[in-house]
Length: 166
Image 1 (cartoon, rainbow, N blue to C red):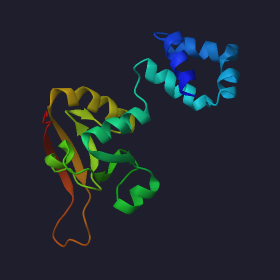
Image 2 (image 1 turned 180 degrees about the vertical axis):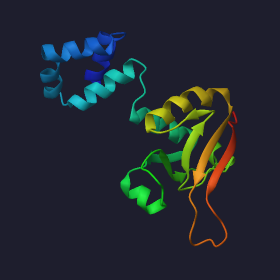
Image 3 (image 1 turned 45 degrees about the vertical axis):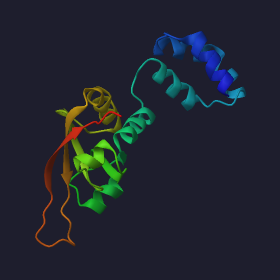
Image 4 (image 1 turned 45 degrees about the horizontal axis):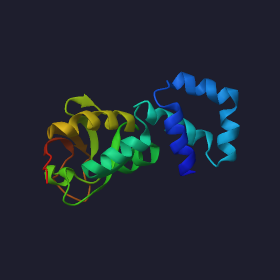
């Protein structure tokens, strides 16, 4: 499998996504399926080769930042008491990371990264890809009200992130 990807990396470097689709139509998919790659893997790989943001890449960038995230679906919307199923929710914060130092909390909904509105994982990935190299950026989160904490209501919070270098 790895040899197949290495071969494809060398063979198809710089080819546009539309050209990948043409190759797929001409029989590349049957060959790759025989070699153990699924159509979805081929398309994700092709997108990544072109520098396009994928959900996998967005999740990896979020992990580098220090959070485990997912898109808000109907179940999460109901659990957190949100008005609509939109955005990216923080499932976990990794200790010793920029996200933890900035004070981002579990169950927070990420609304903005460095002024860029976040509605999907792809939005988050694109924003983190641009912001992380700057080493200083802001993250706006919405923290839903906690019914177990009397007197504390949810609200919009701004976190200032500083990425420390080794």
